[in-house]
Image (cartoon, rainbow, N blue to C red; front, side, top):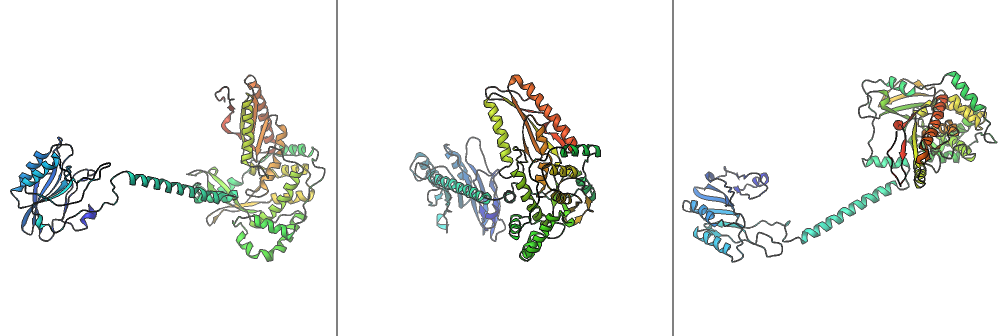
Length: 563
C-alpha cells in the first residue's frame, strides 16, 4: 500500500484475502478532491452476502459514489446486491463500483443473465475488459468487473499485466524442473570445488580451506582479565617431575638392557641440495623469537644457503644447538567459550623458522635409522610414514569385527597420557637413545636440543617474562613426536593384551567368549596395573577415558555394556 500511495493515486481499492482487515488508503488533500463521508461500512456477513465499502467523494464540487464489492462464489447474492445498488443509485448521479463478482460474463448462464439484469436496472454499465481469471482445464473467465453509471465520461481504463500468472500447471511444472536442475548444478559445482580444493593437499591446507568455508571455528587468543601472562606461562612450563631415587632407578633399568642394533647411530653431513629440499617442504610462515620467518629467509636464501649449510653441519658434528633457537613464543588459545583458568587454554608454540630446518635434517637421519632397525613397535601409528589415525582406527575396528565373526566379545580401554609431551624427562630420554644405539656425539646434540629451553606467552603485542623449561620435548617441534614415541616405546613390552598406539594415545583391548569374559577383564586389569607402574617410573601422567570398559557384542547375540 505504501508503494501505491507514492504513485499519487486518489484511491486504491483492495480485495486481497491476505489482509487481516480492510484498509482504505485515500489521499484526501488532492486539489479539487474531497472525501465527504462514509456512506456504508465495510460489511462481512456469515451467510455469504456481498462484502462492500461505499464512499462518497467530492470531485471539484461534483459528488460521486466510489465502491468496492466482493461477492462470494456459489451463493445467490443477487437480492442483496440489488439492495446495495438501490441504496445509493437514486442519490448520486455518478457511480463507480469495482470488484470481484464471481460471475462469468463471457458465458450466457442464469447467473450472468441475473447479474446483467441487476446492472441494467441500476443504470450501471460494464467497462470492457479481457478475461480476468485463469481456469485450469477450461476457458478463462471474466469475473472482475468495473461498473460505471456514465461510461461516456471514462477517459481511460484497463488492466495491469500479470506475467507471473498462467492458466495452468504447465509453466509451474517447467519452472520446478528448471529450478531443481539449477539446484543440482549448484550442489555439483560446490562438490567439485571442495574436491578440487582438498585433492592432493596437505592436512594443514585442508584444514585451512575448511576454515574458509566456516566448517571449523577459528580460535583467537583472548586472555581472561583474571589471569596474567606470567601466571599462564608458569602453568604451561610446569612439570610433575620425578624424584632422584625413582629417576636413577629407571635410568639404571634402561641402560642395563643390551643395545638393540648392531651399529651405533651418528649424524652425517648434509649438502646444499638437501637443505634446499627441506626448505621447500616447510611451509610455515610463523615468525619466531628471532624475528625471521619463511618470507624473509626466502628473499636471501640463495645467497644464505652455503653459510646455513655450514651452520647445520657444524651443529650436528659438534653436538650443539643454538641457544637462540631454543626460545619459543606461546600463543594461548581458549579451549572453552569462557576461559577463566590456566587449564582452559591450549598452548600453541611458535619456534624459530631456521631451527625447524635443522630439526627436519636431524629427523630425516634419525627416523631412517629407527625405521631401518625397526625400533618402534609395529602398532605405533603416530607420525610415521604410511600410518595415520585412519590406519589406527582401521586396525582396531578390523580386530573387533574379526572377533564378532568368531562370537567373541571385545573389551576396550582407551588410555590418554595427560599433557604427555611436556612431561618427558631429559635424562630418561637420553638413556633410551643410548639403549637403542645413538652415539655420544648424537646424544650430545639431543641434550643441547632439549635442555636450556625458554618460552614466553604472547597475546597480541604483549609478552610475558621468559620462563625456563625443565622437562618435555618442544611443543610444535618436528622431532618431538618421534622422540616421545621412543620415550614410551618400552611400554609395549609390558602388555599381554592387544594394543594400538597413536603417539600418546593407547588403545588396549582383549577378546573372549562369554564364558571367559571375567578372565579377559582380569588380563586387562593386569596390563593396566603394569601401565600405571610404568608411567609412575617415567613421570608421565595417564588417565582412562570413560573410567571403564566398552563391551562390543557379537552379531548372534546382544549384550548391554558393562562398566
